[in-house]
Amino acid sequence: MTGMKSGKANMSTEKYKEIIGLPHHISKSRKPLGKDSYAAQFSPFAALTGYDGIVSESERATVEKTELDEDEKRRISDRLAVIAAHIGDRPAVTVTYFVTDQSKAGGEYVTVKGTVGKFDEFEKILYLTDGSKIRVDDLYDIGGDVITAYLPDEP
Image (cartoon, rainbow, N blue to C red; front, top):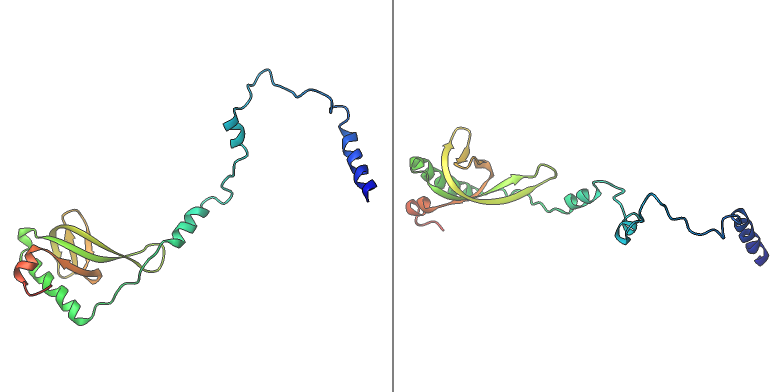
């Protein structure tokens, strides 16, 4: 077997015997690459464009929307009634509500502070002055000074 390996080596060097002894070529018209540029041409590339984004998206956590019981729904309704009665005062509120994820099942709970601009009782939408629209069905909690003033017994 040793003889076969040396036979193959002889065949491959035989092809290049004319150029093996020549000096390394150096271009006269192009300057050589610097070490950083030379190394960069061998660095890994993104063979699967978008793969990292897909992995990040699949790792992103979502939660399921919590269904409120009747007592919690009544509590939210009472708080919205206070806000509706004082809508002209533009009450400041802190609202926690569910935002459905557009890419995957579930979503997240978001808490924002803002000023109520309008409450559409028919469409069941709370409008904040910053342009936010919050569906009443997505509300988890709502609080503020106006609610504390008119519903002092609530936590």
